[in-house]
Length: 332
Ligand SMILES: Cc1ncc(C[n+]2csc(CCOP(=O)(O)OP(=O)(O)O)c2C)c(N)n1
Image 1 (cartoon, rainbow, N blue to C red):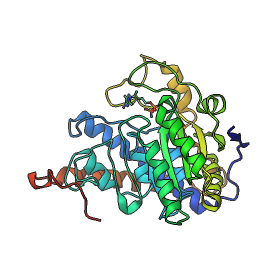
Image 2 (tube, rainbow, N blue to C red):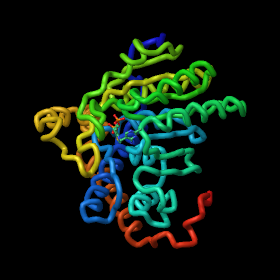
Image 3 (cartoon, rainbow, N blue to C red):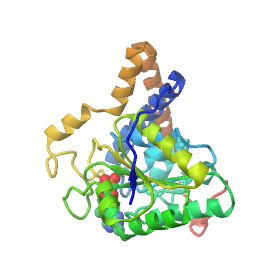
Image 4 (cartoon, rainbow, N blue to C red):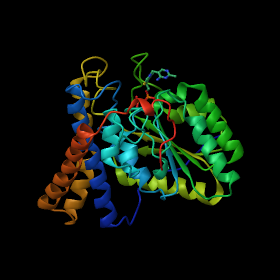
C-alpha cells in the first residue's frame, strides 16, 4: 500500500529563495496573461491551456530540483517550462508557432520541449507521458546517475491505465520519479465531472509500494517542502513518490472554456481566488519586513517587461520554413 506521510511546510527557506519563487510565480502569471491577450487577437493557434492559479505547484517543485534533473508534463505546461528556466521568449515563440520557438514552432502550446533544460515536453494525451517518466527514471538508474524526474499531470489522468502501469513499474523497478498530480478539481474535455482524489485511488485501487503526500498547492512553501522530501527519497534510494497537490485554476480549462457559469459557479472561483498563491507568499514576505510595496511593484514591472519582450520577440520571429518540415531534431 502507499505510505501516506504527514505534510509539513519547508522550514528555514531563505528570504532570497522565497523572493525568487515569488518572481517566478509572477513571471508565469504575467506571461500567461499576455498569452491570453495574444490568443484573443488570433496570434496563437490551436489549444491553449493556461496555468493561472496553479503557479505554486510548478515553482515549488522546480525549486527542489537540480539543473541536471528532468521534468515532463502534460499540455498545461507553460508554467513548468518557465519555472524550469526555459526562456520566456522561446516559450512564447512556440505558442505563436514561430521558428524561434523551443520546439521550432512545430509543437505549439501543448508541446514545449527544451532538452538543454531537461524539459521533456509538453504532452497532449492525458496520462500518456507517465510511462515516459517511468522510462526516464529507469534510464537514470541504468546509467548509474542520481538525477530525478518530476512528472506533472492532472487529476483526470488517474483514470487512465497508463497512470497505474507507470506507478507500478516505478515502484517495482525503484525509479527516481516524483509523480506530481495537480488536482485542480476538474478534468474537462469529455465529462463535466469532478474526479476522485488521487490518493483515494492510490489507497484503494492500487498496491504500489510508494510514498504519497497530500499537499496544499496554494502554498508554494508547502509544495517545496514536499518536493524536497520526495527528491531526497529519489536521489538517495531511487524511491518514487506520489504527490497529490490540491490546487485550482482561475481560468477556464482552455481558452475556449468559460471561467465560470457552466460547471462551476462565479462564487466558487472568487472564493478560490482568495487563496491566490502569489498573494500568499507576497503577504508573508511583507509581514516579515522582507518585501515592501515598492519592491513588489519593481518585481512585478520586471516580469511584465519580460513577458512583453517575449511577445515582441514572437511577433518579430519568422515562421518555420518548408526546409524545417522534415527536420525533427533541434539544435542544442
Ligand atoms: C487520452 C485522452 N482522452 C481525452 C483527452 C481530452 N482531454 C483533454 S484535457 C482533458 C482533461 C484532463 O484533465 P486533468 O487531467 O484533470 O488536467 P487539467 O486539464 O485539469 O489540468 C481531456 C479529457 C485527451 N487529451 N487524451
